Image (cartoon, rainbow, N blue to C red; front, top):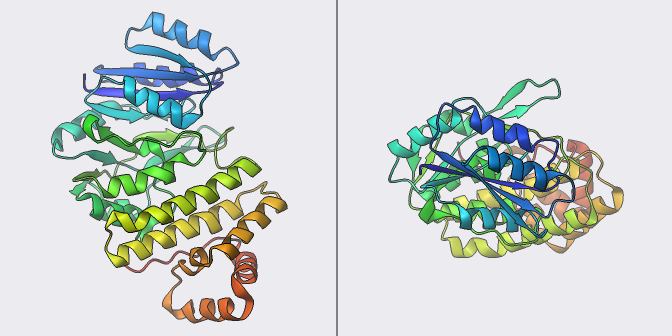
Length: 335
């Protein structure tokens, strides 16, 4: 079997059938869907069992609630395909995506992983391409794992978070393993895992349609657990970076990306309650290296140094955040 599509789902009664239909409508038939019901309390289990009875390519797996990491790990354990892809239950693959994925896998048999940009589903049902400049510049070519890591996570044109699980397609012998119980399991594992792979193909064409405004997404109102998780994950990844054997300039770029992700995106998210914002700013005060890692353009680097020296980490973070809307920090060092 060529492709296993792992679908973790929790209380997905509103979307699960649509996700499965997007697979069934593909012009490529050599796939299985491993759907892991992670202890749903709505009608998801009944819907899933019905879908499995109707189509033998759909395998229903039920487990007690353990979180999305446990569900993804279980799905990978159960998958039988040569290549494993992920699909969130409220997202979709674009028409023809599985055929193109299989063709890329065949054409890049020496690669451990394929990685691609995506389309964002808009409120009116339209699709907006999310193709950062790095994909336009470097896409449609294979790289070593460390080269791909540099392109996707450390350079100027990173332009956001390129570590969502559904943007990775893995050969069976190269699968990651997520730490159970985390919300931010993707950044926790996938970037440094990719750096350790032998060969990675970066595609230029978006193949996946992502729905951002949903329960469980990073765009929803933050909770104390979500804040604690992103802080813990950031600290964990920082601790793991030295063992990855990255070139110094790549390590610096990735640390800047991590800090900008935490300081920029998460603090700028609508609905962020002030106590949670305060907790993140306190974390920056406790981990000064996170803020100092942000790689500003050379013409303003002196300002960062001055702010840090005069105001300290916490006050500098507040001031810079208010001046920039908690965005626009990461300039990177190399094109």
